[in-house]
Length: 288
Image (cartoon, rainbow, N blue to C red; front, side, top):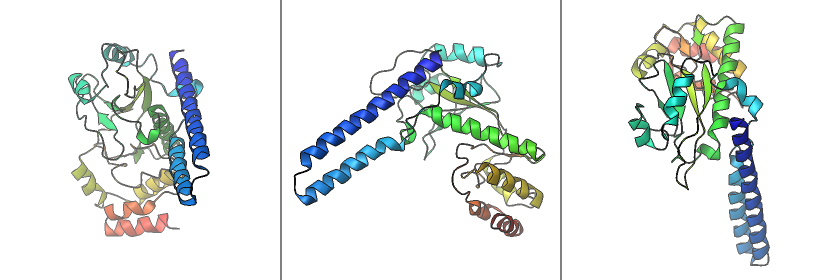
């Protein structure tokens, strides 16, 4: 019920925000309608850009029934411990509170501002989150982004199972975790209500990953498997080795599953990471 109520409140605020922008647009347009032609066009262009910015983000949030299957289940081994851990104080307010709580590597990613971190009390888990002090990425609620990632992972899992590719590939289990009630944050910030928890794929280092993909350990059979998953799921951001790294067990892990089912997959991005022979084969299967 708490999740359902929160979603309803956020939806109401999103609708109110849109109505306010429409009102502002109408007032200013009317005010400047009879100004000079140049000024009128300039004002209209500015206001249209301002108004459109609100539509860029995802204002329609998923309903409760959509996210329920993807929430961390109550009987999960770490659920009770997480509830206790996150109830004590506002852990994700800023980087300092995150570090004070014991999380490692709290530096936001360069383009997405996403924080990917771990905690010694929860081995085998990767935490992906945004802080209360961070603005919404692309004006979009983190819940929508988490849902995309979980749904993408399930699609990848289905293709791997359907085509019996588990000897080559794997994908982490992902859950949306609904944060328990915490201390209220000061006004002017962006309170977060969800984080994403993923199964640790035990990846090799970045250097080892680059070495692997440029070697002959990458076989045509592996490339066929990768191509099949990329094309069937439409993973438009996974045709690069940072998002499909090799793990310590020798399998390729599909770790970034947010962008799926939209647009063409830029298969050519993988070319530069491959050996000359594998590059020629990859072009052959991906450019047909």
